[in-house]
Length: 258
Image (cartoon, rainbow, N blue to C red; front, side, top):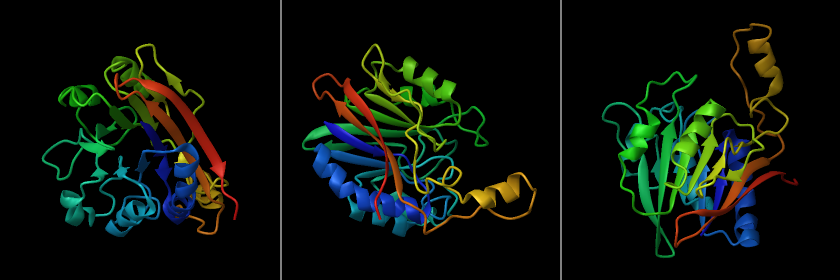
C-alpha cells in the first residue's frame, strides 16, 4: 500500500497547494490513500467544515488534527459526524469524534491514529504511549500522526512502538526534518514532515508580521500572505500489507509553478 501524507496545511495557500498538487502526485506515484494534517488550515488555526469538505473533494481520504483542533468552535457541530476527520486520541475527558479509525483501502484495513505530544505543549493530554496501547492490535497496517513539539519525544515514541505500528509521522513544527528512516523492526519514522503553505514566511506566517510581534513587541497578530508561492511538504510511504512493516519512506518538498 502506498500512502501520501501531507504535512500541516497553513491557510489558503497551503490548502490550494494541496488541491493543486494532489492529482499529479497520485498519478505519478500510484498513490492508494492520502492523509493530510489540517489543524492550521483555517487562517492558520483550526479547521472549518468547509475546509474539511474542500480537502475531501480535492482527493484527501483522511484529515488529521493537532493542538489547534478546537480553535474554531464550529467543529463541535460537525466533528461527531465527520468520519474522515481524526482528532487527537489522547485528549482528556469526553470528547466527540474519533482519535483513531480504520479505513478500507482496496479491501485492506488501515488504521489512522492522531496523537498529541506532552513536551513543551500547553495542552494537558493523557500519555500518548498509554493511549496508543489502549487500541486493538488489529489491523496490522497502522499509521500514526504524532503531533508534537519535541523531536526527542517523537523519536522515543517511534522507537518504543517500532515493529508494532507501520509508521510514525511527526507533525506540528512545520519544518521538514532530514531523518526519514525505517527503524530496525520495520516502522517508518520522520520527526516532522513539514508544512504546506508559504515557503518565504516563518513556518507559514508572513515574516514581517512575526518579526513585529516577537522582536519588536507590537501587539499585532501574525498574518498570512494569500498571494504567496505554493509549497508542499509531504512524504510517501510504502507499507507491506502482509507484515504491516514499512518498505520505504520518501520525503517530498516542492514549490509549485504558478
